[in-house]
Image 1: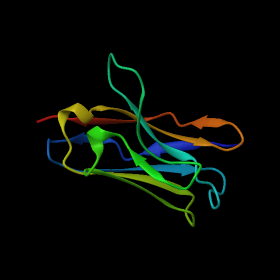
Image 2: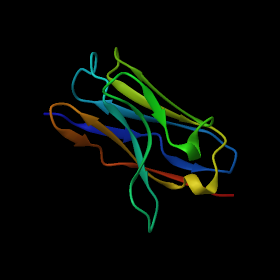
Image 3: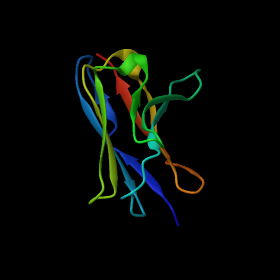
Length: 114
């Protein structure tokens, strides 16, 4: 019943920007525990940014000041605005949410290359 679908990935040069979207198949109004993760080749999946269950927003140090997480409850969509992209940001980006249990999207590829 609950599905998360990422989109917006692509190829971008260093310094460029991308906006990722995560569309939920359910209403997200009132939900707060959700976020973005990424996994680069040869590395473990890591948290990028998230809304916590306590209503706060957290960012991992490598993306602070460059990425912004947001959501539009009227569209049941979560976003990740990525600016000043670096080659190190190349990864598959996944959206995640806790709705009584944990859910994951399939991921969207972001490639930062000159």
